[in-house]
Image 1: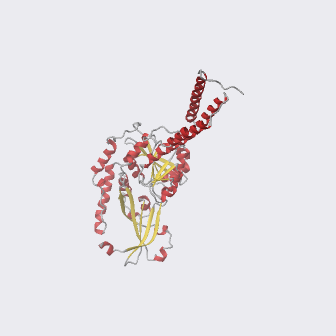
Image 2: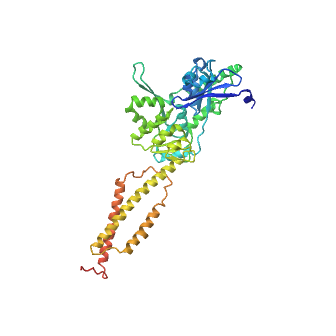
Image 3: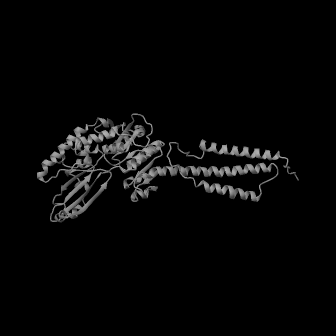
Length: 463
């Protein structure tokens, strides 16, 4: 409260967050001061490129990598004291490019989003049903890889291949670079770089800078080593895991690299998507392009999202699930009241049950007409037909009861790899219909001939 009394800051102009720019900025004025101050937050790579080089630490990239490899979400902060020529009236009409340049780098903010308890069991259930989960996020690439390992999308023995594609420049064609995530600098080197930055902040304490408080995973090198051992030597969870190869390969691709591959390496895109597991720094339109590319490969794609950036992808996917009731729910066909992915297996089970029930209704109506036609045809051969009471009994007692009880079947509680048929003319469905027709025909003909052989049977005489 005392700090709020000393500093009363008003926001004069706001440049909202943009997924393409990966940053947002506000122009403020402190009560009692004449000059305006602009504050920026956003992706560290973007914010760092807009700051003056002398304000950005030399080991900025190494420290950023040390935090992102631990699964932390990192946001960079910067500020700029505007010149006297920028007044309240002029700021209202100036473009953000004029304000968002020559910033002073302030530091990094680390956020830790822990996995929800339902995440790992749901992903295990999907993998057992041969449904491949893929991560598409706007976070840093290494952060996404770390979270992917933690939740099990990337197995403990899986090899992650970082894919970096560069656009053509200086007359050189576009190129692709491959690097294994295991070939990145060791944790001890990154930890040393992190300590050097904290020491630099400590030296600047006399000038008003405050050292950032390290998180629990950054307190010592042994803490990070423990996390690394947990990833590599953790005991398997109680749920049975599907049998996979000892070593699997997973591509991790950034948004800029995805755009270059889409434009300059279209023939390579389908091969990358087969093993692509992590897609980071993806813009909203790139998420939609990714889903369209997977659909062109005959994949049935489901999408989970909770933000406005996911609206296009949720609408384009075969089954889009919004995990919030805000903007994403408007474009998404399905909206979950539970803000986690536990709704995904339920939707798949209910969808499969609805599909199978629809096909059962088709088979039921076809068989009902054909079987009754066979019965009438046999009776016509002896110059007879069903009576009104018999038609009423068939429609009310038999058909109506079957139609009512058919809708009471619930979805199978366990997801299985076997998929239901997706076409009315599939061999499985047609074979079932023809088999039922033959069985019914054989039963009716046998019963008809058996009745004709009885001593009490007297054929109807013509005329």
